[in-house]
Length: 375
Image 1 (cartoon, rainbow, N blue to C red):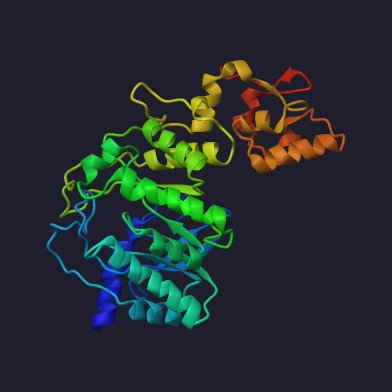
Image 2 (cartoon, rainbow, N blue to C red):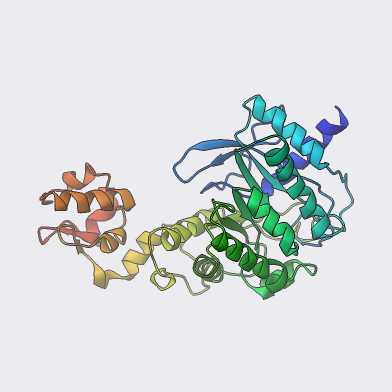
């Protein structure tokens, strides 16, 4: 194995902990070690996009308790040069192994040094090699303003991992990162830069939460996510389930229930895409979502006073509150009504994509109840 191949295997594997899938909790989306670093990301419309996903280096000065690359861990540390990454990516791209680049890094020496290397990769690809495809750059906590500006001018999407939902949560995970200064302040800079120049990072900025590493409950996490959508123009939040990795400070910490991240994704989708308010969601006494059923169904059960909804009269917003009715089927219902169609039978809704078994207890057709929750 060549030195470059060895680095690629190590740093490609290390990159898997950064999420870039729409809703996919499967950590192992890598194509395989035969062609290391190729990652299958899933978009919002269900398409699969192969990306070259890699770290510049696993050398890091931070002490994050959950991270295999923390500064006290003794293992094989390697580093790519910008020329290395550029060369490998172009080889993959020209051979049609990948359609884009997702580049992150440990913080070696300091954030400025490591961020400069990542920006240099993007510059080489754009300016020297005339590459016009997709680039996602991680913004490292503590990065200088001028490097962030250069990054958003070159990338299609940027992201900075929040990991914790609160400053107190961050303090328990790391003593070397400041929640307000190193992360939120950088998010504000990115937001301002993207507002001022619409050509910068046209796919916007995203972030990631680490689920289960600390004491924060689902309500804490979703409150922060809702705030980020409102105040920071975040396009997407990713919910990465904590893994107890040998060699980290949290290697004996309990991992979260396997359904917790999927439930957070579903709740997040209601907030970010369906227009739900946080107050409409239902949490248990510990501030967590129900693991047994999806948040939309649980919310509907807890808000019986607004149901059943009359399909022939309900607004688009009211239709979206009904379990089993999504955005596409809600639009189809509205369009059918505008065309003069009246809904009298459940089969008519089924034909439009409504999941009738879910929706039935929460709807009426021509004033007639279809079933009840008790049934």
